[in-house]
Length: 317
Image (cartoon, rainbow, N blue to C red; front, side):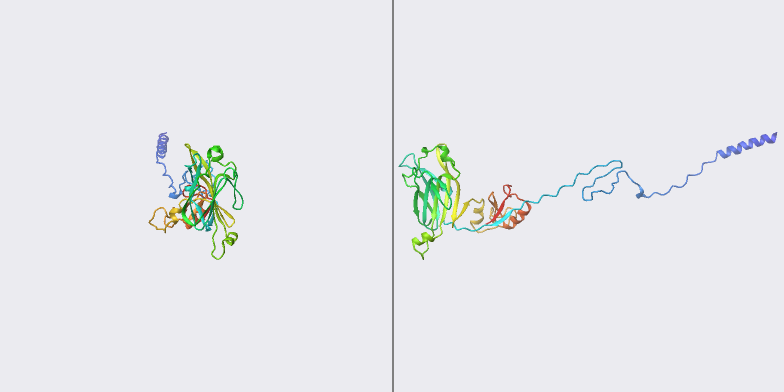
């Protein structure tokens, strides 16, 4: 009995001693390399290698914007070289005006300044209609007959209509004298004609065979504060049967009046600022570039560097 109790106590002690043993250590952890971590914000390879970077997150998808269309090429601009035409006569349109006839109150006389390198004649026509092949037809010839005067060669010649041959503008309503009643009829038309004279032929032979050079100046009358003024609508040059409409070129005076000097402001190309201006932009008529810059401009853009208007043609002077 005593031994049995003793074994029971010893058995419980051995059992308690086994329960109080410490737990075994945990197994060693496997080494994790630094580059083995994967973050949620890690970008995947882009499906658009040539576009901007877009980050994709697990569980979400963002549609990238559509690719940008390629830039439109600049419209083609024609580049032409000017052809020199000999102009034997020229009416300076800024000098064309009407003056009161002091001997005949109520009537006005036409006056202007012109250049001529050969002799010829000029004709003043009221309400003239432009026709074909260098013709001006007076539409009111019975009321206002044309006035023709001969001239000799010379520069800055002044013409004044003879007294008593002027026009009484009160006879016509303002609408008729201030604008074109017809597309080809102008209240005032001046024809300046020059015929080159050859020394080897007679005057009659020259009149029949010589080339004719004529200039038409077509204008209207305008009334401002009770006074009449002349406004030139256009000038036309006829050379050997060919018709040319004259237009001003802005900036040509600064470029060709004198020899080019790099130190003179206003004569150089507005793009490279070194070469002289020799190219005009049409239809705005700004002479502002050199030929080299004009060739580059017509490929890159179709806008005038001065006024930003569309360019149709480039004219090299």
